[in-house]
Image 1: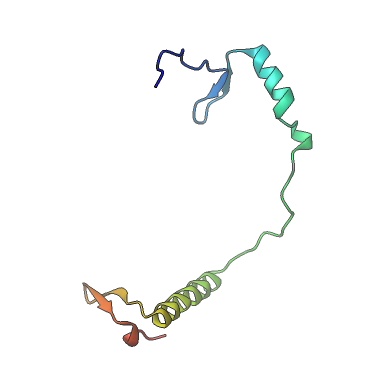
Image 2: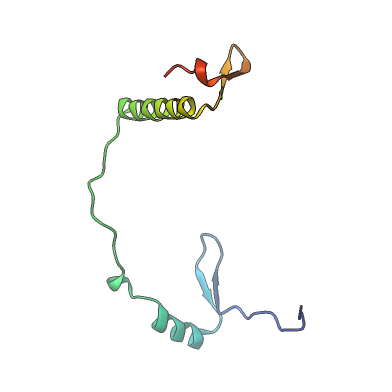
Length: 98
């Protein structure tokens, strides 16, 4: 391993939440012109309507996901682990209620 090379020179950097600091302005402008799109040309994602979720919608989705996972475990013959009466209990596939 060759460790005699000079460390890389930072062209530009930004601390978390801070402004961008540019050390080599000429090189930065050259690279920016070549590789960065102006904001007007940036692609935007597909437009969609904001979905308002209710607590009931979320609870129903979680229940569907848990039921599907329990069914999958039972079909594959895999046991599951549950917390019952303050203890961790392993449940055999044949005892899983779907």
